[in-house]
Length: 494
Ligand code: FPP
Ligand code: K
Ligand code: ZN
Image (tube, rainbow, N blue to C red):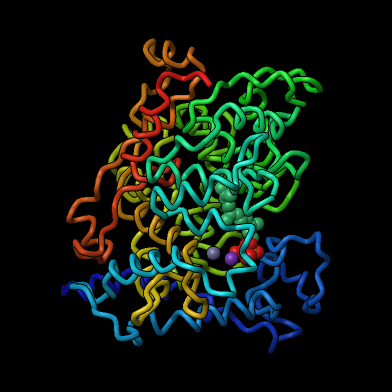
């Protein structure tokens, strides 16, 4: 079999799925009889004006033939992607030895550099998102840019004169970590400010007095850990004064558990609609608290979450959607794809000792939870902007931007490489215990990565030049950058 044919196997599988859907009997033409199907009783009239409380998941109760605004945009997206997925249209991109477009390393790097220059006028609307734009910036320029965004009460705002916000502060801390520029951070003020966003119920707000949101929990724990801030709550924290909590981690696992819904996915806050990006926040936050095999099953229903995440991989595109019945988007290559790296590390040791026949059914040694080759194909064929400009995009009809370039490439890394937790499995070791008594959460520093083998890369349809670097699965940074932050603040204290 030629390598080109190998690359097409994955697509064939995806198209088979789709063909099955298309072969289903057309119930619209057969109002009276017609074969039964699940939920047929719901099929009376298409409901175009579903009430807002009815989540998109409810739409899946309707038969595939039901025409709704959701099914229409889903079909439109599939049609938009198919010519690229089938390589009928390769957009003039040079192809690798498997027949897929090469990863456009230089144009993408050039695109990211151009994002750092003076921003074109349309970006004025993104003033509150500025930290996201310089996630990949350079040290001196970055430090001079973020210095005025730091508020005296701690944390970073999105722009000049704006209140501190968890997402902006998170992006700023990641950017500074990436360039080894964390000296600009007022850590004591940061500790005080984070005390204002911790809630009495164990969760976190996005800003003082703002909404509670699981993104806040992940952002706050990332900031505390990279800066090695004390886990004790400041004396004036409302969570301490009104809720009687003592540390930033008090009640957090239980609050995250309360964000998992009956569907298995994770909501931004208890009772809200689930979203793949929130699943990443939940898993990564738990992985900051403790070893994945210990803490993830302690607070989440892992089989239910795994099934929900796997159902986010779309057919025929092969990328991920953020929610049921919504559209594929390359940024979820990271937000959903990286969840599998975290979950695979949470598998109990006894599972890896299962009979080879059981493992084979699961797709091999713990790597069968998602279709990596399909994701790689989506990213290389549909998410790369052709032409001189470079950059990566949500889907072919979208423009490339820094955010989608960043998270497409992180997702590619999750598909290509292997990540695991190298701390003591099961129980806390003495050495860790001792270090942790200093207050720092060490679990996230125990992650390791290994490049995928040449054989695995062939299976994914990529050549050596299409392989990206390893990315720390919890912090979404280079491993060296994470190690730099750990060393810089190893002494603790503020
Ligand atoms: C819906 O957008 C998106 C959400 C409800 C969540 C987005 C959250 C993230 C991307 C994670 C952010 C993480 C941190 C750490 C700040 P949409 O309706 O435009 O997209 P959709 O149709 O794909 O759901
Ligand atoms: K989207
Ligand atoms: Zn997106």
